[in-house]
Length: 342
Ligand SMILES: Cc1cc2nc3c(=O)[nH]c(=O)nc-3n(C[C@H](O)[C@H](O)[C@H](O)COP(=O)(O)O)c2cc1C
View 1 (cartoon, rainbow, N blue to C red):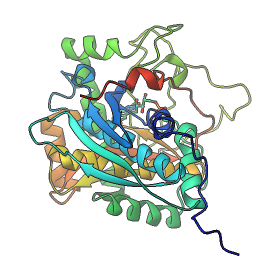
View 2: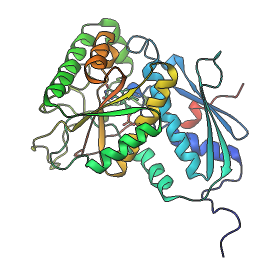
View 3: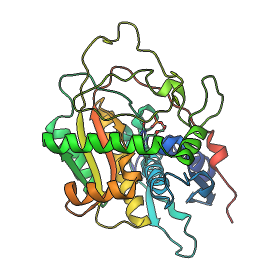
């Protein structure tokens, strides 16, 4: 006989316990320089997500665009976790125009039945990692996965553009390199990024640690340089012995996430689309490398918009492929992101 109530999984004794479990998953979202620029509060079964402006990159991200994209990724993870816990998430974006850091309310709504797709997505939240460096040659992102990712982006109100033209790829790689050099010339940018690129051996649960990037990047063709998190000190993880390190590496599939507008609501949508794309990729062992340097320089972002995005606003530039080995990352404990409701 059919059960009378939908079968739910992982039900906790109290909403507070479920809220904690959902937030514990959400904090594993990607964020620019691993700043984790979010806070969560809750009242009853409502979780409120806020941006934490003290963690915004004042030089690289003065408008808070990347901060809000990062929070959007955390919001998507929160929604996935709430479903996995057996509730329909009811989401209200930017509920109070007078409070710009208030980004979303998520209510643990009606009970829903267990669903394999929710579980598979949820399983990727902690497993997914940002990749840095080239990818292994061979089959990368299948056309079926590309189509799925495009749909996922649309579902969140964003667009996904796969860049295939070899000239366009070279221009995007060259703009990334130019942006990297421009940022290296800017002392205030260097001071800011040093704050989020701690020395090896640090116990800080934030920032990009040396286990997260390679000591030396092999050049791919075309080559999208990574950020210099080692601050020219030669830090970074050594290539793993026998892990195919002598092998040639490839650029992977280059894509842009775009939105029709360029306001905080669009950034929040872009972040949710980003995380859906990343989780779908992780499900099929596809990793992503991020290259947002050019999008942090207004003139270069305008060029990318005009030339490659048909006037839509570029929000993220990614490369996707199969990684040789998973990188490591860190997070603050969820309690440190939870604040009193007020
Ligand atoms: C908006 C945004 C921009 C990012 N830009 C870059 C980038 O330019 N280079 C890079 O290596 N990683 C970039 N990242 C990835 C973060 O550094 C990464 O998410 C963070 O260090 C946490 O590591 P994890 O994703 O492996 O958990 C970006 C992430 C976000 C959300």
